[in-house]
Amino acid sequence: MTKPLEVHGLGYRLPGKGKGETGNGRLLVHEVSFTVGAGETLVLLGRSGSGKTTTLKLLNRLLEPTVGEVRVAGERAADLPVTRLRRRIGYVIQEVGLFPHFTVERNVGLVPSLDGWPPARIATRVRDLLALVGLDSDTFGRRYPHELSGGQRQRVGVARALAADPPLLLLDEPFGALDPITRVELQREFKALEGRLGKGMVFVTHDVREGLLLGTHIGLMLQGRLAFLGTPDEFRRSDHPECKAFMAAA
Amino acid sequence: MSLWHFYARNSQEVLGLVGQHLYLVAISTGAAIAIGVPLGILLTRRPAWRGPVLGVANVFQTVPSLALFGFLIPLPFIGGIGATTAIVALVLYALLPIVRNSYEGVTGVDPAVREAGRGMGMTDWELLTQVELPLGFGVILAGVRVATVVSVGTATIAAAIGAGGLGVYIFRGVAVVDDTLILAGALPAALMALAADGLLGVAERRFAWRGK
Image (cartoon, rainbow over all chains, first blue to last red; front, side, top):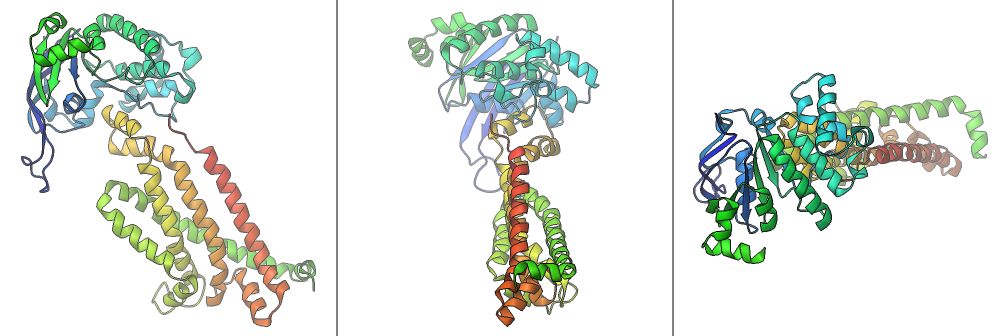
């Protein structure tokens, strides 16, 4: 079976001063390779500026990789039209990015409606997804994002990312802006959800506890490179100084 | 002679001038919207053009309006004596606030919202029409409001080049030193400006989406 995500030798260099040239800008991501299978969650862990968010954006081509190959469900990402690629990848970001002028229903149904699903099918899908993330669609469906709590907004964000049933989900510090209690609550629910969904996920965080809880694999980013890649247990036992530094902070 | 007597005696003429004035403002603001909003949106997609375009629009604003009317008179097609010239001048005046606010309305959308839209696979057109324009609509409308209010005032000067409007009374009043006559032109123009400001202000608040 093809894996949701395969990444080989991914690199990104900031565009240089000369227009259109590559090669004289700063190197932000270098030689990153990993695969994510169905039901697996790779946590990209690292300090601020280590290149983890940049790596994530290279996967759905919000940034174009300078070198390397990304395959989503077997298809080369570079060969797909960029909008089609992105509609097959769920994307959740820290500030949620819900559309403030859309109701919860319309936010969740966004990608299906872009893809031209019939309205009845969208409505059913939205109802199911809201139930999946623990929100009653009769209560919340017609509300606007500003009428929700931070935790509820983040749930809607996850539901939205799942809407078109993508094989792969990218999450960029999705729980970063939440208060500690809501955060733990959502982490637990997300953990339960991971197993049920059977999707490939890449989860960016700088919180090592969150990473160890949610990841089936940990990828430690250091200065744009993948300094460590392994299971959470291997991470705990690792001798790599950066792993130790993170474990000390846990 | 009191103002009310004047209006009672010249009601036909007054209504005619009010109509002309509304015509000048409506046509010129309409044209400025039709040019300015797409231009402002274009600048969000071509950031390098922003400086030059806003610079030119700025220059039009700094030219005294009477001088701008005068400059336009000798030009072929758009120039001459009459309403066309006045409308062209009013459009040039109205452009800056509309272009600038269209640009700022679109670029002022929360970057997280824009990135979420792009990240979920919206095309640039979908992002513009479904996200950026609806969210920036209040700001764009604010530009239209400023442009309209300024146009109502500036259009009084159009009488100087024979375009009619309420300026006819003002210029006539100044010439014969008659306060009532000046007021007869100034009062309806002021009311018109207040009405436009109020109505568009209500619409603007209706569409002001606060972030998050």
